[in-house]
Structures are given as structure tokens and as C-alpha cells.
Image (tube, rainbow, N blue to C red; front, side):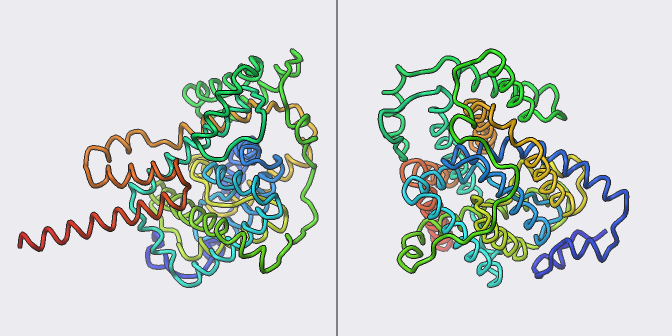
Length: 426
């Protein structure tokens, strides 16, 4: 079977390629099992990412259902699973605090349009060549930032004012709120994270996150623990998709949201193509990078219309799809259908989920995001070490966009100096 290398650049969804090759009943069975497995993983994770981003939990489900279906139906990868990603938590949270939900949705829509333009222009190939040290650096920086953003819910802390968006002021504010620590919330959050780690180690085939969140919710409900829940904070989640609606669009608003939209575009493009590249390595196939960006762009536009947050290719869920036996994009489409079914049937049960349990889920996500072995390997060589430290540091101190741009500029400068030195030696 060809790996797709010869067609990696063309604009054709992999779903059409699969249809042309023929689709058997056995393949559908495998895709259905994989889709259900991924949906079980995505259900608590999508809500946790949404809550961590400062929006209500259904916004993450909308992104996973609508965006996930479109990414699989139109994408350039057979295995990619689209949905909300932990990497966006900080960006969305900052935008939400500054511009509100309508501004976030407009930025998501704008970023989708930009991704479509990047895909059509054929620039998807360039994004794939961002240095590995930059990718590892900004991923680690995002993980630390997300972890800091979850400390409030993890400990049930009560802040005197609004939580600062930048890391250092945030940590000082959280330290000042330590007297309000809620032992029950801390136990729920730590218990959720510990159970996930234990299950992933000893029972890797089990849906660890769903089991942990459900178990902690049952304990909190049965023992009447004084912890904040989805129901107490958000009033629950709806049992279906909302009526499509456009965010407010005016020229001043477009200009105001442009920097945020560009940040969403940059991160979404890098994250999606990185996820697709990892899927290629796991399956010995090739994704169509420009088609993938085009699909991601369309998914973000449509998701914003349905009120969902940013959509991107998700590494953990894509890997889960492959390990569960997913063969074609139908698996990703079915994952979205299963999520919608869960939402319709089980929406009232989400009211009892403690926010601390979702914070525990994100704590695990943060730990998985930090590539410790890769970081130690890169720190042994000074060129990659400098790029890594610059990207990581500026992502923490400033933001993701500054970190990526500075990291790429540093890598280019080091490469140029290297070439100049080699020429002089010759």
C-alpha cells in the first residue's frame, strides 16, 4: 500500500481517497470502536480544557463535536482527531478576560479564515519546518502556564480580585489566597490526577480520565463535599448543539481582535501539523499538509458559528485513535457523533462534576506536554539549548507568539553564524 508521499501536497480530503479505495464492513467496525474510545477520552478532556480557558464546559464540547467532525471529514490525514487542545488554554483565557466570549468567537473565526488562506497558498510546508527546539520550548512554556492557571480550582482558592493573566503576578495572587484553601477541593483535584496517573500506568486500556472524573464526582456527591461543580458555577450544560449565530463583526472589532486571531492561527497551524506528523510516524503514512490546514481553517470558522472555542489537531486523541485501531477519517467523524450522543443523553450528570477534578485532568495534561527526555537531550548542545531557553522563557514571560517568533529568529541567527564560520574556515 502506498504511503501517500506522492500526493502529500494535493488538495483532496483523505476521506475521498478512502472512498475510492473501497470501504469494508470490517473497516467500519474498527473505526467505530476507535471512535467510541476517543470519544470517551475526549468527553472529560474537552470540558476540562473549556473550563481552564475561562469559558463554560459546553464550549469545549461544541469544538470537539463540530470541529472534530469537519477536521476528519475534510482533513488531509487519515487519523487526525480535531478538537480543543490544552495548548490554547492560556491564549483563550487571556482573550476571554479582555474581550469576552463574542471577541473570542470572532478571533476563532478569523483564525480559521487565515488557516484557509495559508492552506490555499501552499505555505503549509513551511510551518512544518519550525525547529524542534522551538516546538519543545513553547510546549513546555504553555504547560507551565496552564498548570499555574489551574491552581485556583485545584485548591478551591478564593481570590480578592480578578486572577492576573501573567505568570509572576498570578503566582503572587495565588500565594496571597492560600488562607482560603479548600481541603476538600484539593483532595478531589489531587485524587483525580493520582487516579489518572495510576490507571494510565497499570490499566492503560481503560478510559482513565473519564473514570477519575466520574469517581471523584460520585465521592463528592455521596459525601456532600463543599466543592464547586459545573452545576454550581455554570448552571450545567445544554443537551445539544446551539442554533448557529455569527459573532458581532465590525471593522474596529476585527482590528482589535487581529493580534489574538494571529496567535490562534500560528498555534493552531503548528499544533495541527505536528499532530499529523506524529500520526505519520506511528502509521508510516503521509498526511496532506495544505489540505489539513484548509480543513482546520474551515473547522474553526464553523465551530465559531456554533459557539465553540479553538479547534486544532490533538496529539493525544490522535494517538489514541491509532492505538484503538482507527483506519480512516470515519473514526474521527464517529468520535464526534458519539460525543454528541453523550451530550444529549448525559448532560444533566455533568452538573455534579467538581471543578477541582477537571483541574486534576489538566494537571495530567500539563505533565504529558513537558517532553523531559527531549529537553535534557537538547540542553546538551549549546545551539539547541539557547533556542529552547529563549522560546521557553519568552513564552512564560510574554506570550506564545513572542516565544515562537523569538525562538525561530534565534535559530536562524545561530544557523547563519554557523554557515559564516564554516565559510571562513574553508
